[in-house]
Image (cartoon, rainbow, N blue to C red):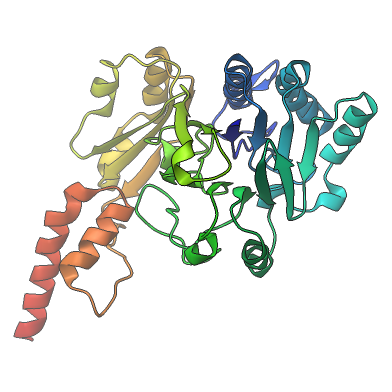
Length: 360
């Protein structure tokens, strides 16, 4: 049994990180291209099933044009006779009003019985394996479902306790507790966009970058192969990388010369964001329009509005635990901000504050 699993497309006709095109917008085209690649991979490698693990769209009722474009890239699965299961995610959780239901009924009328929307907790016997489906439901319901049936290969869209929320090593404190998966063969989930697999258990990750917090993440889909429904040694998990458009972020601080730096760049259709930090005088001295224009000439597809941080207004604000040392709190804060380079400076500042307080 060979199954291709993808997740979290978040298709939308309105994308912040995109330019308008005749086909809608550039990010929509990017995502449809990557989805098409996963479909073609399934066909070429003779997959037995394709599963999209939730949040295919970014809203409850996607417009007809968007649904058409999505079905269009998935249609080769029907021609190849590969079953497709679409799992409900939290962005489209209300099955009663979900417009894709119309497409499901139409496809059944046309004899395309390979397509099924998963809107309820359910199981399916497939090539000797028991497949379990967990769409977006209450956590208690999901845990009760897991307690009743074991040795399943699970597919779903739910939070799981301990899962990475992002690249900053922040973990989920809510969701299905890990012990509930004891006795199951494998589990592949959508919801969190960071790809993270521990053996045959974890998150597929979004197939494309959704924002700049995902700029350093690999994107792709999963190929799950099982030669027997019994035994953990009889299955294999592969993460198949895709080549998504780069999200590139540049950070400059006074007295850097951003324009001089950008003039040396060669980009390849990147989506670019620039962060500037300095005194008000320095921030005002930089020609933002010229900076954006030079980035576009260097090959950027889209340049986001610059993010400005004034040193006069900047304050070090971070939550900390009284049971932890200043050093560990500083490390945690800098890790969250992806600015490990600021640790020594913050440590020096806090040391000075503590010494000053002692002298009072």
